[in-house]
Figure 1 (cartoon, rainbow, N blue to C red):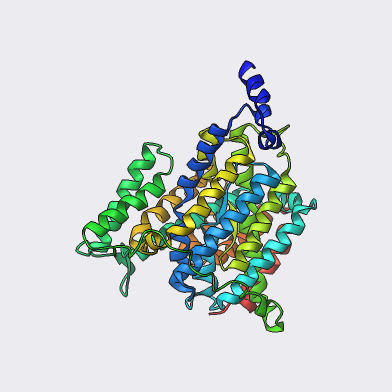
Figure 2: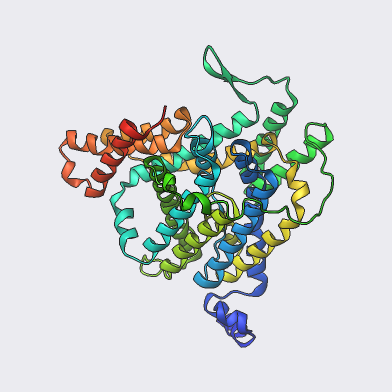
Length: 450
């Protein structure tokens, strides 16, 4: 109590706005928390541009700038308006869906400009839902087991992409996939990165994924597997994709059935990823009141604004990051920690030459470790109930095997009402699930391209 009185007596206007006294925090605690969160999620500055530039035709530099700016805007809005110590950036899983399912020639083959427009529309819908009671209805309608399955399936899909990009998993005409060559320097470097990152995370080192990327990149440069950067600091690359979404957005050809599936998938994944992150981090920080999240509308609106701003800049859906829990563990309790994190993202804008040499070989470990974290939700599925297990299992399995997050979701959402109806529990399924059943069934019958 004495400490809190001292904090209150020395409060500045900023401290009063963020209610330092109420939460018993200080500038130092919030600064350390903001830095910790940045280090824990800084890997996205290398991973997101690498993933999007791999399949879409977007350039690494422009996606790097879009990624950083989206993180800055979203995190600032979350910190200043919603006052939560939560940072935002283009989300893992959603960037994979954007690149490998929507834009890739192996997926839907939709132009990246149209895909960005789809992201923008999903953010706009999310913004509307954030100020209504509809979001609670939708969240409650989706069975918990399917929510866990979607998260785990995305985790496996992301890990698979990481292994493929590093050459650890390769195509094989006889067995479909096979183990890559251990005589390849890139494969050995990726395996080294996975081991190092795993050890750092096992030691619970904040920013373990980021440090793993740094160590792997340095070792790669020493052995000539990774190019040495031509400079350390430079002006941020020009975001040439800025505003590219507006042409397709106002075109009649844009509004196809396939595009609505894309928009709804962006919306669905972001919806539950954000809700889960907000509740999880707020619980950890002791910010929940009567099992409810204060200022929930503002928090969800912050996420929506970030998604729309990121799409305009040229990147996939921006969402709240669970890595913010690292900052909370370091003492962060207010939105000022998020403001600090945004400041470090702004500083990182000037280090693009260093990050530009980060290849899929270097980032493989990050993708695998994010996959590990997301797959932890498998343990929460009620596997002993076969009517719950089958839709969940198919959802998880289909994502990496069909190379499509949307297909995995569609299969699970079709199977769930069917298994419940056969069991005689169809009345327990929310009507929204039956609507989604019809939507996804039509998706497979008429809309899904071969």
